Amino acid sequence: MAAAVQPLVRPFLPARVRALTPRPSALFSRLPALTEPPAGVQVRGTVAVLSGCVQDRWFRQVNLATIRVLAAGGWRVQVPRSQSCCGALPAHNGYADTGRALAARNAKVFAGVDAVIVNAAGCAAHLSEQPGEPPVREVMAFLHEEGAELRFGPLAAGPFVVAYHDACHALRVLKIHDQPRALLGRIPGLELVEIPNGDRCCGAAGLYNVTQPELSGTLRRQKAEAVRDTGAATIASANPGCTLQLLAGLRELGVRADVVHPIELLDRALTAP
Image (cartoon, rainbow, N blue to C red; front, side):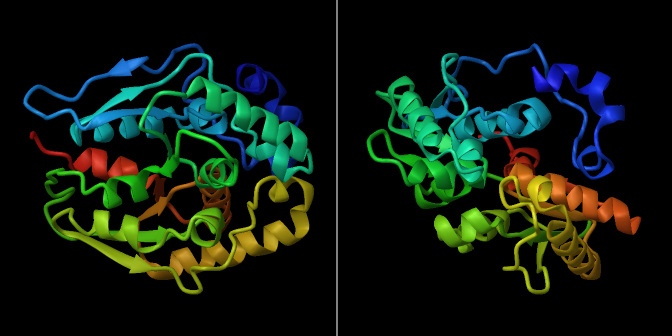
């Protein structure tokens, strides 16, 4: 509903909130309920994808890329229609019981698959701390640890420079650092550069950029300046909150750069099996 009314209320939002709000990428369309691996690719199992709230309404292309890469790696991909918010945002805002209840509801919806694949670090961190089955796996870590046999081609004729941003939820809760870098390193011609003081928070921090705008804005500017100093025209960010924060910070500095999920880079680089 928020995504649907956004064009109407956007002019009336505070400037700091308006700067963080992109245009919805999808309102009424749905992700495919089931995607099979391509012909000739051996089926390795069945996974379910958490579509997410912010991710699916503002970054639908990330979910589609996730489905395509998983299928190319041999996974049958389900997207259950009855799934709901994972509970991360309520939990971040102090409503722990609501966060746990939503996570428990989704666990029932996802029952029976080998793993639940999550492409938003904040959602993955929240769900990973909840008890029960099936296991929750962040998409880049899953692909790396499962040894997906994916073949990649170059993204550009020459070097393709990418700065990698570590979301705090990925780095500190999920302990993800090397896995996405190793996967991206398999793309011919892709050159990864590190962001100075890259382990510092960008200021998004769940709802922090809305509830604590002054300190969040300081962190945002520091992060944007550090990204600018890498000289990279593409930044990889595996969390939608961080992505929104980075985009707003780079706009403030007048820096033109693409901020994409690393799974999108893998998807673009995929070659036929």
